[in-house]
Image 1 (cartoon, rainbow, N blue to C red):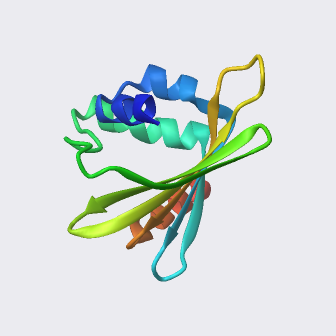
Image 2 (tube, rainbow, N blue to C red; image 1 turned 135 degrees about the horizontal axis):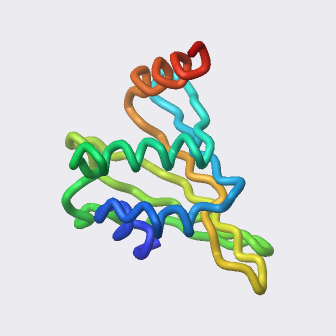
Length: 128
């Protein structure tokens, strides 16, 4: 997890691309119940665009905690908690750990305050 977090903080898209499984999906859920699912290609495009604009996804990882972890067969689930705008944000990561293969992130489920902007962005891309 720390390699992933550090790669995100550094906007190291090459490392992120290696860590995300080819079947990776980012599932976002907000407090009003809106959901959106981003494919690996969509998620990586967002990281690349931010990096090209000189932006980042944060400047510190001091707030990161892992309140729960579990493994089941060749998968593991890690719950991560962060603080964003003075409010907790929870993430669930599902890792694939196939023997003889690189360990990769299969799913990232994010529980956020409001994803209206993301829902609109995904819909606009579908309409284009």
